[in-house]
Amino acid sequence: MNRSVKIWFCIGLSALLTTACDDRLDVQPTQSIEASQALNTEQDVIITLTGAYDGLSDINLYGGGIQYTSELLGNNRDVVFAGTFSTLNELSQRAVTTSNTVVRDFWLDGYNAINRANNVLSALDKVGEANRGNIEGQARFIRGAIYFELVRAFAKDWGDGTPGQNPGVPLVLEPTDAISDDDYRARNTVAEVYTQVLADLTQAETLLPEEQENGTAFATKGAAQALLARVYLQQRNYAQARDAANRVITSGTYALGATFAEVFTDGTAGNLSEVIFRIAISEQDGVNDLNTFFASSLNQGRGDIRLQQAFLQLYETADVRGQFINRATINTFTSKFNDQFGDVPVVRLAEMYLIRAEANFRLNTTIGATPLEDINRIRNRAKATPLTQAQLTLDAILRERRLELAFEGNLLPDVKRTGASIGTTPATANNLVLPIPQREIDTNKELVQNPGY
Image (cartoon, one colour):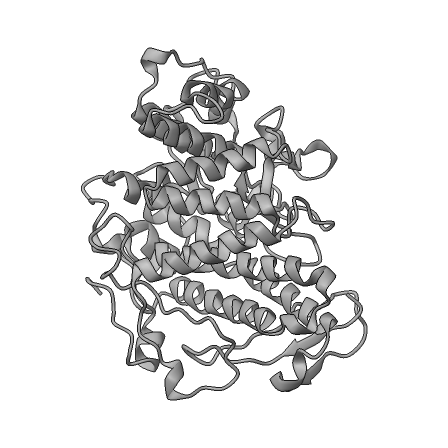
């Protein structure tokens, strides 16, 4: 970018600041301009889209917060939290307060990024026909992804009660540049939010290209398909989940890394062909908060989240995934996030094989491959003993998800959709749903707090 513009907006739920991502190499002074003048050209829209990606990559969203919130809330002594941050300790203890700032900023930054995407979508008439579809697809991808994360975290799971009655999160689909009473909105139902998520991601799939010139840090057709597979899986719509995952796999755009380790390694030693969507981190921009909390001090992290032996014993002796660890004194850490400036993988191809395997197994179908073939493809890469047909059960498939996708943010949604318990805590427990932040309850009298808070 050769321009750097800060656009000042307000989000309808509370007064939020939205800033387009600054080009750190731009030596021109940043301008502050009125919202009515901010989106007059295609370049303005592109800058705002860059700001939406900047919001998506925030440490409280896909920069780490979404993932570690899931892993800590859903943890059954796979890890222990040994840090000093009370906010993360509350997550680990499943005793979250309404004033928790991690939860507050998850909500705040989520709606902030949504508003940026809404501004892009409101100004598509300023974009030339050649770029309009791609830009719309990226904005819809961002909005759909965040609403999916918000409704999974702040509302009951799709299978817990009645989605058409359970309160979800407020849907804000137009840009907000001033606050009025109309902006204090009640919570839409879980079903309404999922309908919007599917509409955005389905439209994104039709509009986005197979590849972006900028790489996997920008949404592609495969990224939209991969998130659709996740959404349908969470809804227990196994046929649609299977088919979306199959579209990713059969596109030929992605390939499993030759080794497990290279998937989590940037640079020439790494393999990005498996990563469908990622958050780009560099020494100049972005923070990998999975490194911050999961990595030891030897790898520039805080060493707050430590692996437990009971979890490592779930792996076979030869399984390289169980060996993908590092130790500092008496503590053990995952090696997935060793690089302080490593990109954050949001979704990768291995997950698509696991979704297709589970959905095919549940439906007794073999679309794309048999469930056994898909599971053993993942196990062979990990040098784990291949399963036989007699050994292939639903529990075996779900166990494979846990072993392959550990610490990547899938734990709590899997607990909820499979009805598993966390120790004595059932999947439907109130404390597995985040509270609506107190500042939002105080500001917006239309909001209803979640049970138990």
